[in-house]
Amino acid sequence: MTDTQIPAETATAPVYAVPQERQVVTAIPGPKSEQLHARRAKVVSAGVSSALPVYIERANGAILVDVDGNRFIDFGAGIGVTTVGHTEQHVVQAAADQLQDVIHTLFTITPYEEYVRVAELLAEHTPGNWEKKSVLVNSGAEAVENGVKIARKFTGRRAVAVLDHAYHGRTNLTMAMNYKAHPYATGYGPFAGDVYHAPSSYPYRDGLSGADAAARTIAYLEKVVGASDLACLVVEPIQGEGGFMVPADGYLNILQGWCTEHGVVMIADEIQSGMARTGRYFASEHFGWEPDVVLSAKGIAGGLPLAAVTGRAEIMDASQPGGLGGTFGGNPVACAAAIAVFESIERDHLLGEAERIGSTLTAGLERLKQRYDLIGEIRGTGAMVAIELVQPGTGDTTKVPNAEAVSALVAYAAQHGVLFLSAGTWGNVLRFLPGLAVSDALIEDGLRVLDDGFASLG
Ligand SMILES: Cc1ncc(COP(=O)(O)O)c(C=O)c1O
Image (tube, rainbow, N blue to C red; front, side, top):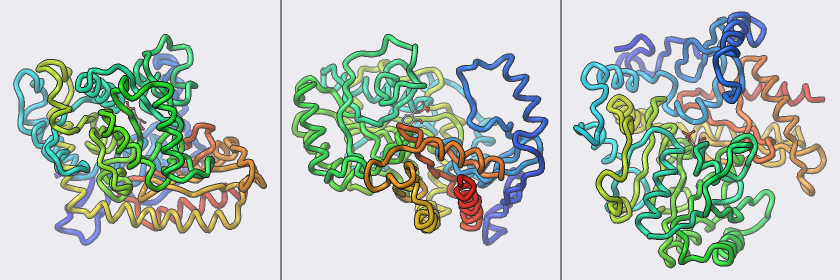
């Protein structure tokens, strides 16, 4: 038992060790954060930035507490990682227990049950009713790298296709797979070759139906790559860093049909959209899409580093023994935490909670959209919602991106104890991806601050 939460059996609703309320008691950042920031500047690479340089001492439920005693409502969850809530008691307990038993053996030397159990849970909960197998790794980018490697081995083909506005990571291959070069790739080349960027579905800006957008994507793939050379098409079912674009109806299924017809492995990058975030285990389910391979990371282990590639057994088994793995991949403590995450999703009805959060957020944002014409679009599903901001008066026509407003709103909210994250190819999207422990009261409070922020823009 940890001191972070009172056990569920003694409480009707979760009771948190940290009050679930925002509280600002110093300037933001406060003096202790400023001191830490000065220390950091001397020893931490300038290439590692921080969106909000307040140093966090404690995190619980939906609240971050900084070293100066300020409490922030967290609408970012470490970019969609602490989906079950910060320091969720079952995750903490499972990891603590595992630390006592086995911290590391290396699964490729002497295996352990927790790895197998995570693979079983992924086989059960990823879309598609067929035999599936997994490999566990450490990070999202590593999952993407392995997904591509596995698809190449299975197909014996070279080329990799991704979509415009995609984000897949910061390793050499994944830098080449991102849409946006800056800041992720600038100056870090040469990059991996044989990566092709096909047009995506972005209904707010392209106005295309799913069928028309898919025809455009397929035309590009056939002309520029050629199906017979294409190993895989990697797609985020709802694009994350690109700005939470939800593809038009039918788009993903038409692409899957084309991939199946041509022997191309279609890979769902569910690293940001998966693990209960959207009200389903995986966002692909909203579209009835059953991908050949699913990539998980971020929310899978409640904040511990773990990621997975899960796919059709025949694809996953094409790799030779020893071809997949790595020292820390599927670490026992991270696996124990992941098992607790799966249990929390069921026990605490988190799929329903994600839907509740989505309804509350969307209703509140709709009210703001009535009043502020720079909100061009509200989009997303469950607890993965965003607003795209445009220059006032351009919303219905040219939709000129308004990154300045997003920056100003993020800064305003931070000063008032709310952490919002930006996103979007043009930096003009404000995204909401809170942990699923966030109450309606906290969401409404955060939206009030956002409303004041819009009013302050003048
Ligand atoms: C869709 C998607 N793919 C891949 C990644 C890379 O994951 P990681 O940062 O764990 O390497 C991210 C991270 O934001 C992501 O959102």
